[in-house]
Length: 71
Image (cartoon, rainbow, N blue to C red; front, top):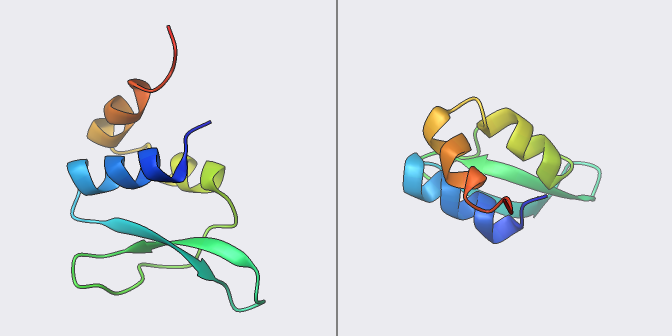
């Protein structure tokens, strides 16, 4: 799996988005995508795997993350 830093780097390098760890409405830790204007985009994600599933539909992000998978 990828680390928070790797995923965040992929987002900032390949898109105009960022990611933050935040508390969701239930008071549990979650991850939020932040748009270029500093606003949260959509709902939070419960774990990093969910974030990767969502963002890996972007080919550039997917390729960026693949560099961290050992050969």
